[in-house]
Length: 144
Image: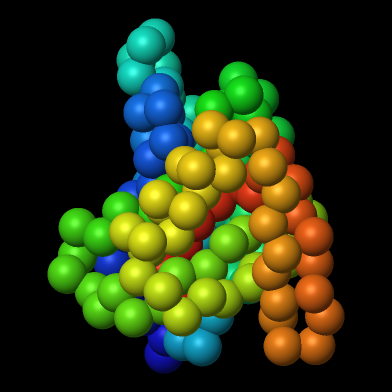
């Protein structure tokens, strides 16, 4: 008999602080399902996605579909309020491509702030290819 357990929530915030996104996860047997709750600070409105199976190919796409207004406030930045290790961070690009960096998320956040300020591009490598990425194509920073 399979039972359901709740996994720890993960919180993301937009860089401008206008939106907070919480990823809720549940595990039943070997299957993991997740959903996102999106809160807009200005209007204090909240929307929640349906439960979907993990892994999901484009999580930010699902968030944007649920609350289209968040598109102008991207990227999302994962907060480290759970005391997890900060060894690696990763850029999550449009379309769901994840590129891991061996830098703490604080350094990656500063790097992204500089890119946005200069309206610049960054070269990222996944070990096989090098991507020349416009700052507008970066949808989230996550702890990897």
